[in-house]
Image (cartoon, rainbow, N blue to C red; front, side, top):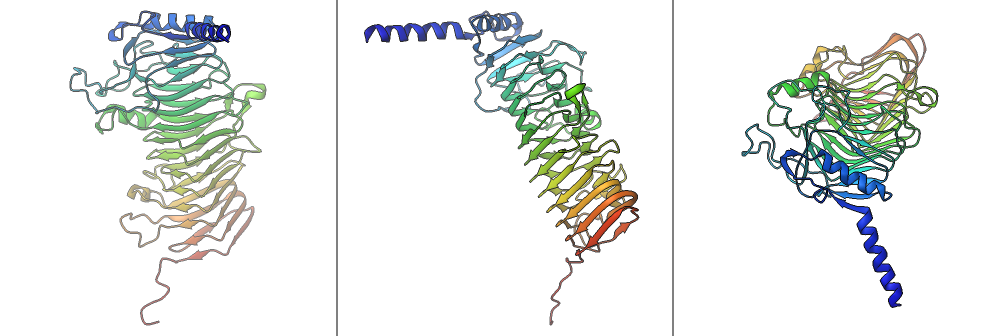
Length: 450
């Protein structure tokens, strides 16, 4: 028994020696001034040489002026067990107005001015970034954003993961699309991505995006910052290409030009075409275009359930796949500048709304005369509620709820409730069913004395 225990102790000690590294032991200074890139890579390389393991990043501020490769089966882990946020919007001790940050903070300066350069971290097979904060100290809020490469990028490997992280002001946050990245996981990521948030493409085996919060952590107190204007003019929260059964839950983008953009995959062969995305309790808020569907997978498409969306919903003429909204709150356009107060639908695919409610909440949505404009394809609106009417308090927006243009192939508009007049305009040449809809339900059905 004594020999067995001794053997177990020796094995455990050897395992801890070979599978665990600390960046401080590899020479990282953590003073926010000295470049710690080489020390980090040394710790990662040593850990990878033993078959993988954990590289620990203790609390401190680590300047990384270069790029890191996180090899197969290595986790780079900081102090946090949940995504952090800024303690205050501005650190009073910072001469540059940087936020006050704590925990394991990576100060990234590499690739300044080059959005296509090497990422801060390139992830290999089974590699994971966990529990860190990333801040770009040379990015300022008083000027338009400086381009930088992706903060994290897959190296073309499966099972890459980003968990429990805060990326304060990345120009581009996570790229799991430039190279194939099957079975990826992003969970508990907070980020104010200035140009691009999360990019997915070439994933043929069920990626997972969970609890991703794209929100102005850095500029929330600076509404007039050029950064905010840039993000609303050019920013894209989620860019979603070819992926099979991608699960997205509890994820959110606010104040982007496009909140969720579904695109044709850039790959060939099995990587070609649109994706299949299942979204629940997710959405986009205060975006010029909240949802843009350029292409989805024809037989499966995109499905939103229990989600909330504030901004235009645009289904492009290029789309031939399914787009479904079930049990969603859809709150209309920010400004009506795309010709609709809520949605413009085209293409040959089928777009359906079931048990949703439509409410154009922003006064500027009155710039458009039509709430939902169906230019072509197929549409079904069943069991939904149109709240806007002439008496809607505080909104001053009462667009025509629905217009079907001549190129509509099929439409099922049934069992809906209209607080005001239904005002369904039907110019479609295809097959259309409009029946069993209630209108003017906001009027008092029981006048006094009756």
